[in-house]
Length: 267
Image (cartoon, rainbow, N blue to C red; front, side):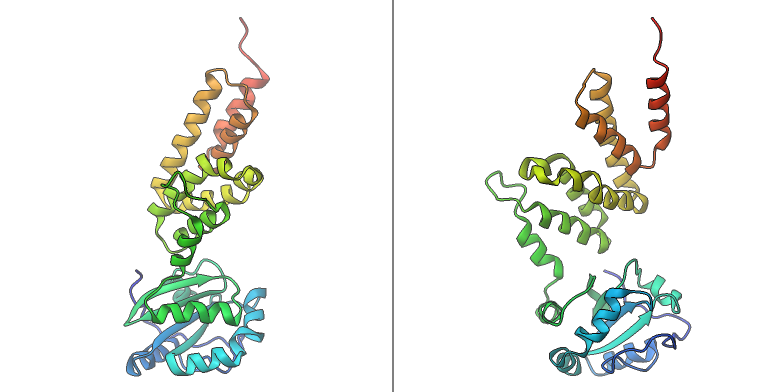
């Protein structure tokens, strides 16, 4: 897990933000020190002035009476502007907004990304107090892919892969995406379009961040090409090859294929 962040230079909350009252008005460093002194959780809400879901949470979730009461009892909360406090955002490895991180005993315990209602946030926070992680529920919903008799929830498995990637568990995320690419349509053929678009985009991002994922996805691409070279006329195989080339960033292979198709060798 990410070690508790202590940025060398003071990070004053940006004037462009107008955090709800429950957030500390102190610096990031002073807020984290207060959490340690009071033996409370330290919660960080990474936001941006242009982030629609962030603004929605400011107007709803973060002013909800139940949330405010929970925070007062259990945590010190700080809100950071990822544009104005770039060093802090980088140290926290913020990639999307809103990202909400909870630290326990000086170390990151868990993080969630995206808009959360008051009830959703409190469910997560109460789980944190019990030592749980957001991914625990995702795993339970997804079904056991190693059990042939298990009912697989493809949407939940995709969410699991994304959650693993966002939590920097790149090796496990790679395993999930590999399984999904090869098996998801066996469980739900309606995800064909999602597989080649949204999931492919997630796989591209992972390949850019984690070289072993790129290597693994390249092997998938090469396997599809072997089928094509062996004479396969299956349109899905060819489409898989094209998309996998894009996932691993090998547009040159696509151009070479088009050149060869345009000018086939003469006998």
